[in-house]
Image 1 (cartoon, one colour):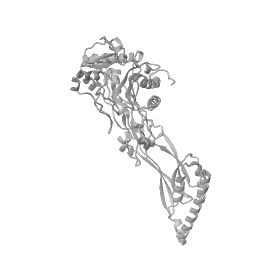
Image 2: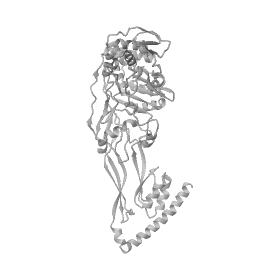
Image 3: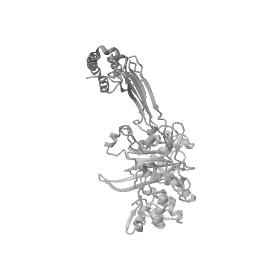
Image 4: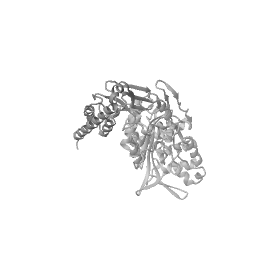
Length: 539
């Protein structure tokens, strides 16, 4: 049955209902009808309820970005005319049917603000979550009662409720609570939802990071960090989900509700950044030479390099650029397990990151000093395998420390609370701690730049400005449908000279860090080029 026939049938049923209703009203009122008409009550209809706003660092909202039209309808004696005007603009006719049947003022979502009918007022209302939400894993979502369930919505639930607002339409009604014709309803707005929470995220960078992740990652994460202060400028977890349809995410088999930026993973060769720092600090020269034959034996166990034929003679810079396992096992063994562990601790591995009240990233895991008494365990640790588990947040902090001259920042996600006019409360970032000498940071930064220019990181090289980085393909030990599952990483900084940003991309179930995560880094770096004084890149 087409929509016109449905509407026609509904007209007939509605008129029958209104006729019966009018007859009942006439009988019940009798001689008292004049008095009843002179005294009336009121009926309040909720049009909109809003929580406080979540902003980016530049005071741009990252929620409430959409809008919709809501019609407040006071059923009239000539409800058929109202129905005729409304029906082309309503997707769910059952709402109209129920509303007119009850006879009380009601709301219905419509597709246009230009609806002219007696007893109908159209409001433009905010939509808290759009389908293509910005940073949904960070903002989180609320439940049907309007309370925060995850992310910032949960961490700052009280604040966002404090800065809530409501819009109410009040009608004059008769004894049966039917709106009285000829009396204009009053609109009351209470509260101001302009207050709320200010994040460190940058909407532009977040949007570009989401575009890059959508383009190159099926499952994984991206984080962009200010290398000087640890401010998280973008945080993306794939697959994404829509806070407007959480039920679909709950049913999905790929766990889109997990925030992969805050989760721990096997790291692999990106840990060679920390190993190089530890080796240099232990007195091993950057000119230390070792010959890679493709395999190295430690305590009767063979550790293979990705290049089966071997890389030949290498110094530290070349071994780093080649991501040579045998070279780094050699210098890792010379450095010693305890010193490697100390450097890992200095970089914050194994320590939980608190990003907001009740919102933390995983601590990850480190081998113990006792476990590292075994030479094979040290060999594994030297190439980022074994017990080591880290989060993308921790890796971004490590990259930041190397890029900024040796000072480890603390990741920050929230700048403060905004009262609608001023910052009512601020959450200043922690002062970065020096974890490695500036000279060592400079040497390892040079290794990372060489990696992008000449080594495994070539797929990540941006169009302008250069970059430094490290690839990783971490073995997980998992097997799915007969296939070994690896995590592919690219962790680096941009631009090469006077770097400003740390960018870390992780691809779950990837082939290789350069091939899978490198293009994500390149896309984001190209997006950041104009912010660093370089030409805009068309991608």
